[in-house]
Length: 296
Image (cartoon, rainbow, N blue to C red; front, side, top):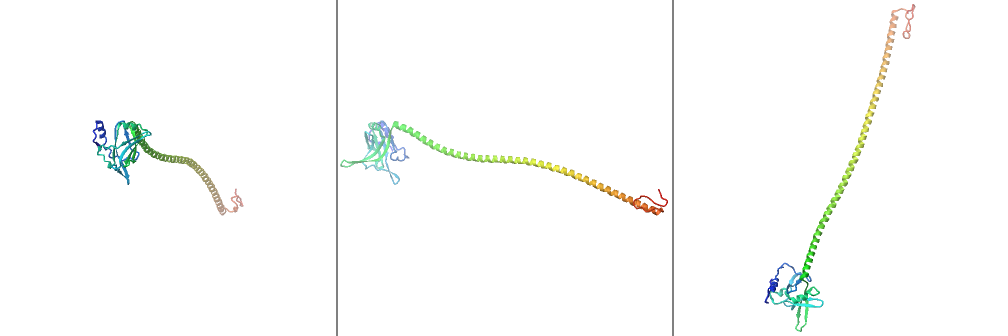
């Protein structure tokens, strides 16, 4: 909203007036104490829209019947009061709008104060001359030089805040990654322990296999040696058995031969006795023949 005035304006003043346009339509009201203005060493114009919170809703304050509105600057040794500027059009005080003009002389005095607070107050003068003044808003002011420093400081603070936020987010990510790494390290450690256990088991099995192989080889050798001994003994037993059978056969053969000889000679004697007269009986083998004439 451009501010219109009936006062003739110089070119610089016209430039200042053109600045009074509502270019920040989306900017919200500033709570008590948070509003800040910049004051130059020259003429300054400030337009405010004052609100009151009613049932949680910001409602413009009707300033049309509150008396005179002042912008007040109070220092330790000085007090500067600026009444609201009325020689303009399109300022709707019933909608909470108020305009102040701070001239060059007042600006220099204000900048010299040791207090950087300002107050917007209302004063209603009674017919008897008494008055009551009430503060409806308070804020702070800075010089252009201070504003530049504050702006830079604010930028640094904003950058620090943004950096802190990003750092916090990165820290969360780092913590999560460290947790993942820790879990993976634990898993690796567990798998390494399992691998070492398996390696030890394999080594133990290899040792057992070696011992079993040695035992199996020794047992096999003993078995073969025993088989050889058994075979040798069996062969000796068989040889002895053959010898015994041969001896038995020889004895039987001898007995059979002797028996046959005895039978032969017995038969011969019987034949002789039957064929040759005077032959006596043979009592045991052929020991001799007796007779009358005898025979040699």
